[in-house]
Length: 553
Image (cartoon, rainbow, N blue to C red; front, side):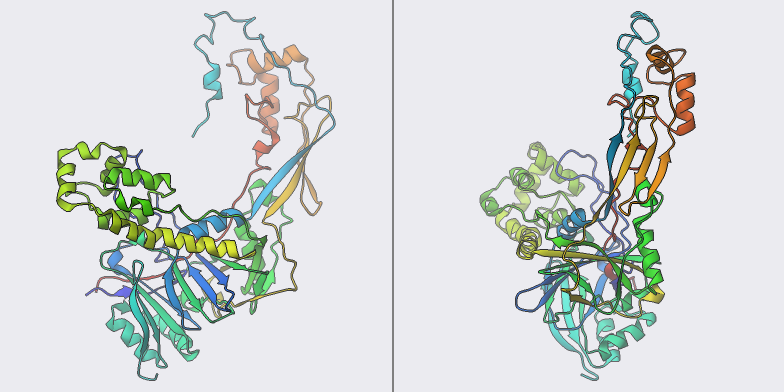
């Protein structure tokens, strides 16, 4: 018998992001390619305010491990309906709202024009000289009830076996879960007692026997609770220090925490723009100063324009060529990921001895049907495009269409972020809509890079000041004058025993002393921004890990 370890919100030590659980492919270039799993030790959750007063909660589930050992449980204040969603919703929301630290450049005064040195090299070396064969290409190259349990719902939803439970007896609830294959750690007992005492419902999930971990989707819960809540207390049994949590709120006005503080991180920090300070750390300090019970606003404002839904595939119900079917999927925006791979594997299993990715790539590229073994296999198993369209609609097309409807019908988006450690997870964050806060808060924070030119400076050697949005400035580069004439510059840059693009003595001394690179033009790709001031930093909670792992009994 296999028992399932419960994986709570953010149990990152046991559940990490799974971007692809597919077998290793022998080749890429088709529909499917290998993808690296990314550790996302955090949680993502979206709350959608509905016109009927209900709230839809979308929780991203990130898990890596054997499919038969996956299980997940979540307490929720009101009885929910259960559906599945799409990870694309979180991808699109993150891309539009992650904090960014950017710079714009202002040049003051006039810098010395940089000599072109056109023809300088040709005047000194003939075609048989040291650079014959085209050395410039090399220089430009870059590296790459009591006693009873009320089962309110039990059934299949997407890839999951789902149960919605309620009980006034925590021991009875634990017994039901244990009898149904869930292993409840002793450390979770007090927290489960807490939610039972609050008369919460519990949503429990297992993967269906014919589903793989790559087909895990976000879970969608809609209930009459109009105050969104993140049930974080259970998470403390298996978490990481300063676990990132990102919450999105789709509605008609800005949202703030109800029982947690709303704080602002210290953004008056040059390191956020130069790369020496992480936004994550700035938020952690602000939250810790508030006793660990606080959120910051990453973004608030008009709902961004997000493209989530896919084109209809109803016309493919009559497509009997598997290769043409796959090519049409690609043309309509389908991605060769682990979810699609799982659906195809159930509907069009590969021949014995064939790697699934390689099999589908061969069909996609058009040569698979020419292989006698593949052709015989396809004739033996048959291909039912109608059934495959049904599965694709249920697993991918319909969830993405619902997500598109959510973002299109809600004019306002709020993104809140925090980090929490186990000792801070002693109460569940709740949230409320607020008219007191300004409706907009940008996720883009722009500093100004001032280049102070003068006749003794090339632009790439001129002093640079970085001005933060607060108006505070810091000298980032003192500047070094160059007093040689144009011919000396060309000699310094291209002459001596160095190849073109390699500075000699005087120019190299300037470069080494200040960390400059000679040449401000496109050929050298050197500008003050390359020192790191203008780097773009995308920061946010990595993702939701809402699954409790289980092990073999």
